[in-house]
Amino acid sequence: MLLVIDTGNTNTTLGVFDGSSLVVHWRLTTARVRTVDEYGVYARNLFEIAGIDFKAITAIAIASVVPPLNYTLKRMAEDYFHLTPLMIDHTTDMGLEILYNPPSDVGADRLVDAVAAIHKYGAPSIVVDFGTATTFNAIDARRRYLGGVITPGISISSEALFQSCIAHSHRLGVHHNG
Image (cartoon, rainbow, N blue to C red; front, top):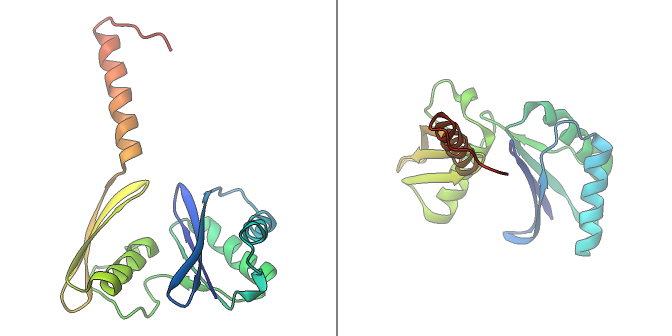
């Protein structure tokens, strides 16, 4: 079985695949201060709750946009699963040519989104990911990543709108309780 880990700025998602079937998935808060052991204990406990033997994991792939956690997650895979994980980045051969320059500026999350879209829907594709940021990514008919746009996510935008409304109401002399 394959353990996949997608580490974003807000959440870290773990999934277990048996072949192409998703068996189970979990979402944790991304915590840059969490240690190798904390991630290991979380993973082991989640596996136990789901009734999955962690020893059944034969491969691990990690896509992270939080560089300070890359070493931590790699060590967690090595220490707790005794596996060397595949760390996804722009150098990973995924059958996707990256035309964006420089390719190193394209986050692992955007690359795996593109590959997943091609696998599920074919190419060309436009991929929209609603996370901490909302990303739009373009893949042409030749399976080439063309680039995209990063915009504030829904939560960030909502919070900015709320703060703007409060600031505006204070300028108008309206006061809120709570």
